[in-house]
Image (cartoon, rainbow over all chains, first blue to last red; front, side):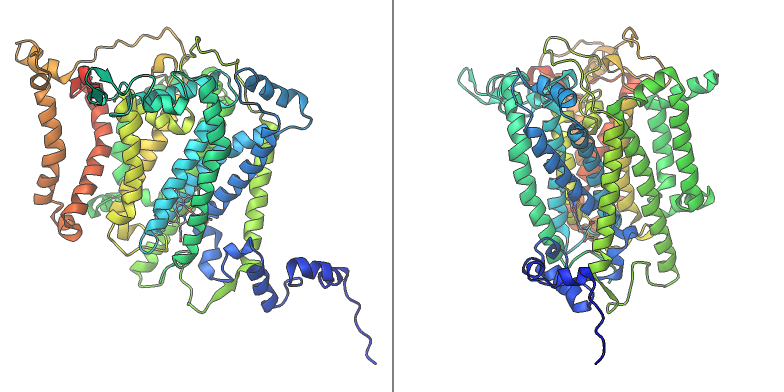
Length: 263
Length: 372
Ligand code: HEM
């Protein structure tokens, strides 16, 4: 009788009923296992099972889209942790941020969140640049480029709404500068061209208390209302929308024939 | 030490000088036509996209930063925690520009020699996502996380004084990624700089795939076959966006005045504001009759000029050099492209009108908040 080679601990674990119930496939060694490993996993299933060689080359995609998404995940997680400590009111916002750095041991969540946000803006721009330089916006991927432009806009708007939340001088004045522009929106801002045309008789419809800037700030200046609105947009509204568009974006990368390549 | 060199750099950084230099260089670095291509080669600029060229660009940027950190004034700006992203932006833009152009030139050479591009593999030559892709992703993700952790541990997030609505800082700057728009505010009113142009940027970006009808050059880096398209995109992104961000971050101090990188940000720097509207130039200085009361008559010259700019230029171009483009794209796509391009070029045009003639507004109807 031939002696059977003892199984390694790892193999034993990967053949245990518990492991199998979670991952179905064992350690991906054989070709079949590797393919099933991708197919059976909801996250990895974002990917196809096989790809043309150039598509996995770092030199081609720079992994920039993937890194944009990864940064979004880092921001989501660090953001959720920040929400435990932060109250979006004029009374508490600033002191909560102060406490965060003074009271929370080993706290770098604020740093991770702030620097991660800057990094995401840069990563998204570079991803767009890569897509342009490889001509990947051309048919059949036109629409996914459009979705991408929306994602970039949403990324910037997410960053912008987050800028206000520390409620320090930098925050309110940067948002004041930014939102002052909304006041000049044609027709919809009270200092915009054409706004005076929207009137019933002598009564102007577009005033300081009814224009787009007012809608954005929830008030005539950057105050309590703006803080709450920006908080809700930043933590719920915009992430919700950007996630929908990301889902469409990833789906379309697959449906448009996978990563672009020479024919 | 090196004081004269510092004042040279300060001088070159002035937007009117630096933008002029960039505009002059740009078509030679990214040649949009065959004529520029010839000069691009003759001047040896194609060497930028080689290892040696990359090293030179990297060294120059690093040298400027290192030098900057030894200077009292420049180091104050460079050392601001919130300006670190701009340095990362500068490095990464140059690096990826270099990488993309290098790949593009390699492919152009392959195509010229009738060989397949470097991205080409025979269709049956495929790899499994596990392990070939998931491992790359894992490593990229870990490296990015390490980078973020180091950055976060090394540099605490700044927190300024508590918000005070009655005390406005000078200068009050928008977040860095919007500084291009804030820079536009110097030359255009908020309804244009803050609303119309950003909308046009978004619409224009979205329209790219529908305007560029050229099906070639998809799925691999290339330049020679799509030089004009790449030129326009890079002009918008590098000059009108990234460059303006750098100006806004490093060179704009109190009262949004220009300061060279080695100059001290002094609140008392006085820059005379002597801007004059086009209508005044025409009615008061040229015709010496005084401003007409009717705003439409008063601004008629500006209105006519803008109508001609947007209406006549496309027609003239279609009669001349751009005839083939019109034939290829049809009139709707052609008009859209030219309109977007003209809107884009309006910014540098207005800048130069301001710098040379102190022109304030081309059309100025403050009664209706309509100033251009
Ligand atoms: C939050 C922002 C974004 C995320 C998370 C994201 C994510 C991704 C990912 C993971 C891919 C797969 C290939 C790759 O990594 O390069 C991809 C491809 C693509 N993205 Fe994005 N993207 C974003 C923004 C954009 C923007 C701003 C654009 C363009 C304006 C864009 C246009 C495209 C196109 C056209 C493709 C297909 C490329 C090809 O097939 O080669 N995306 N995106």
